[in-house]
Length: 489
Image 1 (cartoon, rainbow, N blue to C red):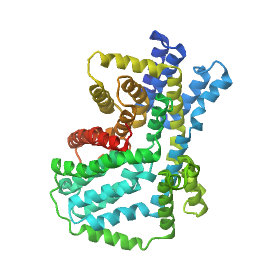
Image 2 (cartoon, helix red, strand yellow):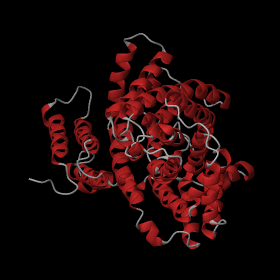
Image 3 (tube, helix red, strand yellow):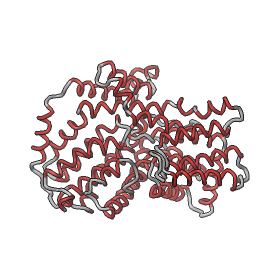
Image 4 (cartoon, one colour):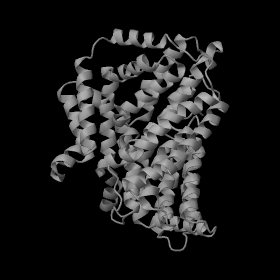
């Protein structure tokens, strides 16, 4: 019998089976609240459904919200249980990402995203390596206002990369992918995890990381947009400089000089003509968002001029709507934004109540006990925790599912083992995006670029692993020193 559209029965059955086994078969561990254990059963089932793609993630989230409300795992009162189940929608960080995704639609609609990429190529494109850096620079520039890393790397940069490669005769269908397309595709993809790690608003799960850190520290660490961006500035730039060189060494392009690329880019820019009204407004809004997110008015005029990051996002979207750069229909049809708000709310809600009911603390104590038995200090414990957390991404096709499942417990365990809280927070925050480099299914951008056929599976995994080691080392060592200079720890 054929499966109904949108439902994968095999994955759904596994998800249900795991939930029932944890709920009814496995005894509640000593020291764990039965309600926490039952919520954990629902949580594991939800994560399994997301990993197995039993249904679209938004649909899974709706089912999860319903189950939390109907089972009363957070409260015996039906009304309170429903309020708890819907509590995630009141989280401002969820709306920050949703609104920012809507704003990012203006980059593609106005053509500004493509213009930026072609402009960089017109300047740096005389060599294949230079084109790689131009693609990386272009993505970095639009990353702060593009929370969908898939839209950024796969929807804006990749469609620009492909015709450039094809224009120089590099086509996987003709067996000429090594000419330059393989190199550019790998740079195109491996830029994505780095830029995602550089800004809270560069990928949807980052605000979830901020929330989990705040919950684990009792709001003792509440990372702002400016703090994150400043902390990631130095390691991010160094990673963006080194990554194309690593790829160039591992998968060198056969065509190393591309004197025609700047001409190609200038022709594309000529076709686009001068900056149009929508592009100029997008640039203005982009600048306004960065200034306000960085807290510059508050630095100059005082704390009373500070604005919440989500309020700033609403301001940016309002300007685009009032000036008709975006229409309300554009907002309504931005399915990714609404989908993100729904699944994000469900996962934040479940993760929050797992913490409130004490399960995260219990689980972190088990991890802590295991590592303490090895006798390593906090440095060794941090490396072990972050390494396990990072490379567990081989088993995940969703960064959101991975972060939701593991971040809270590993972060709490690390603090208990003596790691400086802010150092561990920033390192794990970066790792939560950098881990996307590992596989061809590690995030939504990966299958888009992999499907273009320029890179073999073996090459993808080999480069991904080496780049992951380089990036993680940069964040742990250079990043750690930079955060020390900033006084973060």
